[in-house]
Image (cartoon, rainbow, N blue to C red):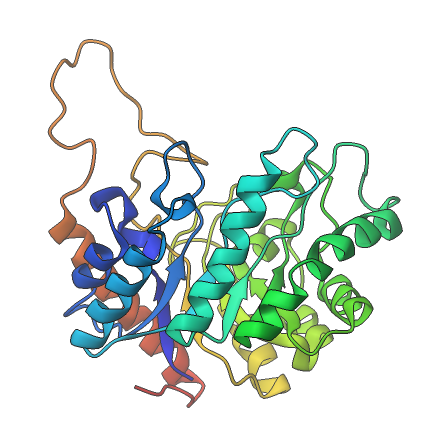
Length: 310
């Protein structure tokens, strides 16, 4: 199994994904997860005519450094929100799938929507029905670019009881309902840890539908996106589940909050008497050292189960 990590880990320090790619040089990571999560905002270049420029620049920079993109995360868009800008959301989502096709990225994580009138677990059937309509609208792009779309699990604390892909069984049930050869599952270990679930059993329940991972840790209450061993995650359960199903994908970290950068779910306190802040954001070089440690944590985890690959 090979290690990968998200480009989102360096987004607070850079303006483009190519710049983020450059910061991973020398950290050990050669396989990256392209984060499109924050591309929807007023004036976003990703919604303009030259949207491919940044994508192609990132691809060239990765190739120059001997790296590649192996997974991606779609934009932060809720298709079930009646107040969302659906034109922008759909455009950005479809473009992120196209970008994956152009860069040779096989898998992209796309979150299902949430709706205020559907409560967990009673509204499951209607939730599945509405989200199936959304994912069916992505099928033509998925087929054109030969990209797998992966749905992701979450937790009540994140979604306020309005999200239904919580368990491995629910993940597989939705993928089976969609019935498309390019729609599968991504398992977020931190979200599962917030629910206190048996991660080995959940992973086994998804079986061959599991095509991607977001590996992150927390203390079981907040979605803190820390590295394994920094929280309460049972990483043995995760690994034994992956071994049991013969998982063939990447061990992809989304531990982008190893050094707190002052964002959800926590913000660094700011004393009102302090007028100058020199350390509000950790230096990028310090973050690079943290990412290098993350690589070693991943190597240790995979080596313990005899499945580490360069």
